Image 1: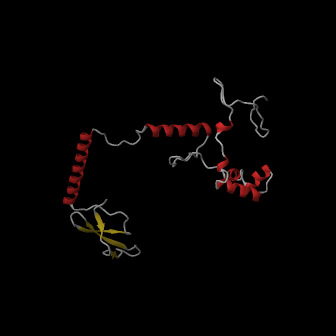
Image 2: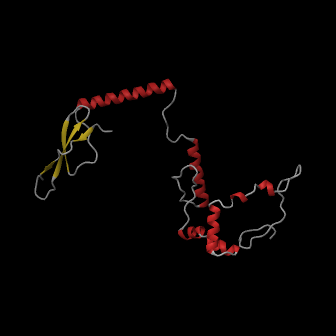
Image 3: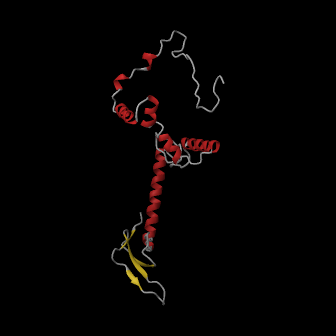
Length: 204
């Protein structure tokens, strides 16, 4: 934080030195440390305050800064802890390397990097694909698949969301066959091909 502050209401308009030149403004400042007042001429009111021109004040600031650095060094030596270093975290390096590999291998140059814990880095889908994904489980499509109209499907969906069927759920172990010693609990009894799948399928 700068110790110099602008004196509110003390600004003065400075007339141009020659014809057709813009007028300027004289801004008055005061140092909070030593109380020294000074002014500067600007074309417009500055955004940042200047440093105090008083030499004794500058020397006092340098001395105070040196004392703070010495105190920090003594504390680090006493605690045996080095100062914080940026870029030394192995986890951050691993995340960056993984993101770079994924971007190079799969061409995903728009991965999200401002994610929080629990969020994924997957980029957003284009608008047509996002609309298709959002409407994939729409009441109209689901109702058509199970033989219900959109209104009944929406009512069924709301009832499920509100927990109407929570007492009907059963644990997986209740329907899975009991396994004998040395055998898996689940046994494959058959396979059904997906006619819409365009990739390679087993048995074809």
